[in-house]
Length: 319
Length: 280
Picture 1: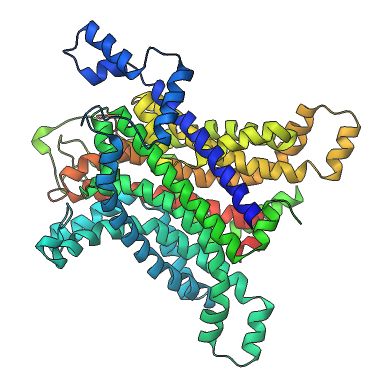
Picture 2 (picture 1 turned 90 degrees about the horizontal axis):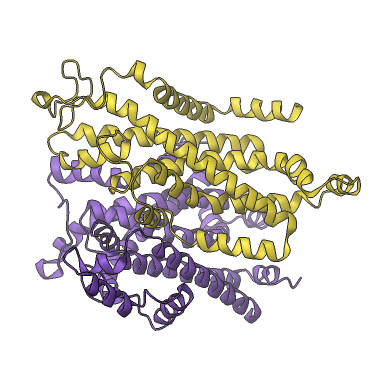
């Protein structure tokens, strides 16, 4: 197991190293002089040259990359061109809002997807199966930003039940906080919900055909106990991996959802940075998001190996 | 020949796949024959008739804030959305396939380096990678295709590498090699044709993703710029008039949903037809 964890950790380091090179290279391809962008149109040539010197832009690329990497290892993602503040501090300011939205959406997705997937599997080829999987397929095919707008149209514009934009405050009461959270979290939960439902169905189908489930049934256990106590626990294992991938979808979806609902999270910060041509901010945010995604997947890989030790043996080549 | 007939039979027996194919076919027909089908010029402004509702005289789906016919803009929008998606998948698919074939066939350091880079690209959430690339490349049709194709590369590379690893160890490949066939001949004449099924299934799913990516980028203002009609830009415009003219956002979103759903249904059907065991 330790060998597997070390193996995976080195994989994580190498991916993050390549990611840092990709992001560094992309930002160096940006047309125009970053120093000129930073100082604005009023800057003189001397000012621009001094800024280039200060930012280290006159140095060779390799030296620039080494300095970029050293900054990263110290948690320094650079200084925002627009806000003139540390990118990391701006991210940390917005991160809790994205975590609130993301975890609520994930909770909704799991709560709906798992019973839906299990129901589809246990009643295969029934109305519930076809209906559930069609809903899931529509969910996967739906643009998250469109669903957000449709929810606003129905629940805010037409019915007037829920606020259309912004984030509520606990100071204004619990309902204010929850009412602002409902629509964006439903919109953000759709794709993970649909994907998880499809995976739950297929992994449950695989498990309920196995011998031990047949044995459990032969022992006279009730169908509920057979499905939820015996079959579902094993069907859960593949779900773990997919859950990790869904975090990537959620982070992508957050960019669009937060834009629609003016939710003050990281996604909104990235879109603002794009509009303001704040390349340092875009670079820092993307790197931060990728780090979260890769780290979560590393943790899930390890959890997966703990749940199923055969994985670690296979993965490190010890058979 | 017999195998391909069986696959086609299974595909045509799958009702959902047929519905998916019809949906995709309809959207392609709209895109190709847009100039014949669209009732008006999609960019023709008529400020006196702006924001007309659905069912208005001469404007079946109403008009936008500049009085442009919404139905015509949606029909022409199909052209841009499909152009971006198809070219991006073709480009990304070709690069990914070549990388996957090379990595899988040669193995060793070539495989390690290629697949590590692919893993790193895979670590980027799709929309975020496309956003970052578009920020650097700038707006425009070509850059949009380039950005979405780069996003598509790692998926193809992974799938083709996996298939190549299995096929290259088959006995008939050993025989062909012992007869003196070159690496290029083995890879392109014998391994690649056996990967086509998986590539086709992934390409259909990837086209659905590319349509969503194009719409997302245009919605964020990073893709195609107005007045060119694309579903993403129409939706972006409709957001401002959601209360007054909800049909602008509703219809453009429905167009995206129908197309993406069509590709997904077709992709699912094709996958089941190629490997019926998966259907379970």
